[in-house]
Image (cartoon, rainbow, N blue to C red):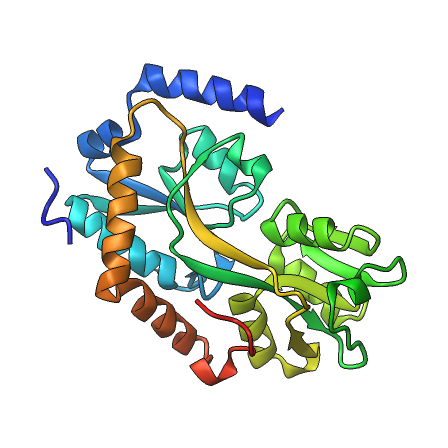
Length: 270
């Protein structure tokens, strides 16, 4: 590893000014000896918080722990939501948010690391709903649930603009809408989709709409003039991928929620 290292556009501009006044992200981490990441309490297998113990788990927690160890700092996890995470990065509440899919809109507000791994958007579909393509989903009579402001929301809105999209505050609320059959499908990335159906088969089945939408899962960081933290993070991610740290963290987190490699839908890679 590193071996012990001693409008959106307007808000982006103000955040950049603030960062210049407060010092860079790297300087803040080194002076405080704390690396702050965002965690979504119900975001398994990415991040998850045990309601009884308060302990965090998930592959991005494991990855962040390794990153903090190589920086010789303490890891601090701030609870957030997928929809609020970009703002938390912008305003300096957290230093980095893993699990962010880059979009043009988000790129106006924050910087992104190199990809941590590839991802793919899927649909959890009710048992009697059998779309195979995005064209099948892009119809006014099709009801799709998303968690508001997330990449699931942005991608579904872009690829199925004619569908009736219901937006919910959290991922779990969107899943509940599917379970109660208020909608026919839920837009979600494959890890969450496979895990949800494995946990509750009554939801339906995971379908990978064709053509497969391939995205990447990256880390969002504050945009600033000093590139030290961004350059270090990018190098660390690529190095950790080469060592197998990222893949092993993902596989372990999937196993923790009873998902095996055999459960991964055809056409999905990471």
